[in-house]
Image: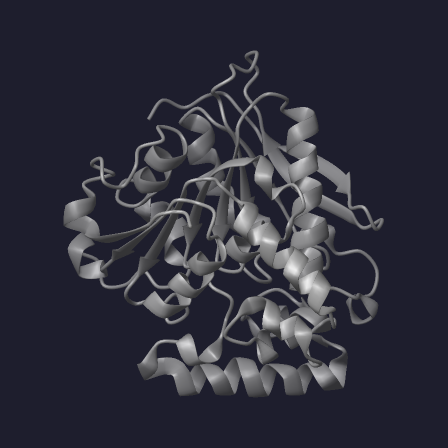
Length: 324
């Protein structure tokens, strides 16, 4: 692929409740044409946006403008003491993702907004008040960490690690020191609480005590309607060796986006002649030629999976979900 002379520029934005967020923008110097999308990349829980740099550059070189950013308390958006930071998945979606959406609307006027959501990044899309402005969505392993949905052979170990050890350490320190343990970035206590007590229906978590916040039934109904208001065509990609992104986990989230035409494409490492992909490796540069074209064709060429999306019939099964 032809390389453009480019460098990511640092961006700074402020959420509606005053939190400073940092990130990067890849923007073409040419005047934007109406059909050039700006792609926002939503990270997985406590993963720095820097992790997605190679993938962002790939999309930029393919013709898109691209934005990456860190949620409050993470990476470029960590300011002050993380022990005193009140942040959960609700704030990450309703305020932080909303802030980058508003940035895209203001700085890239008249360009379609497309979103990539990795893991919980695919959940946060539905929480933003301006999610109806999104034109297209691609998710990878997107689900909300409901532990009975974890891969059967690894479920017990994951439950002990994330639902026992992680909250125990967090109660002692006031945050989870993921970076020190080499697991993920340091994580705010509210995010840990959301992860630990997550229920089968995402919003039911907040109807009961235990999560990062308690929401009224009316507020939960408002958020549920917000999920359903997303009409952007959505392609959810998953792989069979992802212990988080099981079929039920992926479909549980897709059910919330009932207003959008949705496709779920499930891949096997064997079909690609690789030993593993898992929850994170899709974004590794070694898959630039094998997997990244699936996202590029969906986001930039707007090819539907049933129209020869990266030889989809040979890569994995596709299931379609029409809007309700």
